[in-house]
Image 1 (cartoon, rainbow, N blue to C red):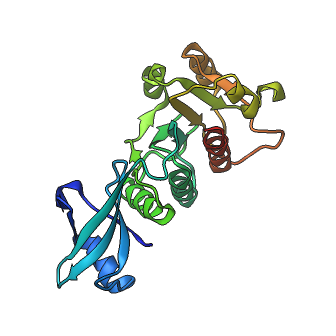
Image 2: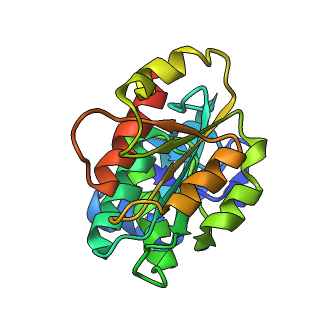
Length: 238
């Protein structure tokens, strides 16, 4: 079934209204008809199986048949903080894939060696929304405002586990081995640096906040590949 985003305020009892851009997509792009079944997601961990009862010029009215909480969501809350990349298109792909894998919060990061100074926030939010519907999640990842590395570290202690992939880390600290020592986690923060890597100062600061340096294997990975690899390991563990 096709997925559509719906604002919780547009749900009235067992009736849900699809409005705005989502209605245009339903009626003009995928051309849904009355009587067809759809999945509705509110972006806040709830999905609804519904059937379309009415389509008019400005909205579709659906009858909710069942409600699913945390549908298609990982059992662990993952926050991914990633330095902005020189090529914005690569960061776009990163946001899309992180959403598909189950990341709940994405933090665009500014590090010492980060080159871009800003990001197109609304574009990233649209990419995350589209990816959420495409992969069938019920949670829309929150995309934070651009955050300085040291500011991120200031709130890092709230996470059960804090990981920082680093190219100088010994292979004995491979991420798969590290995760085996943390079987009962509720939340993970993964921090990925820019193309030039973290500075020695940043690595030292992260250690003071309890970050565990990890290896992602013997090959040098692009930043977006490193992010996707690290998230995949964590999701696969839980």
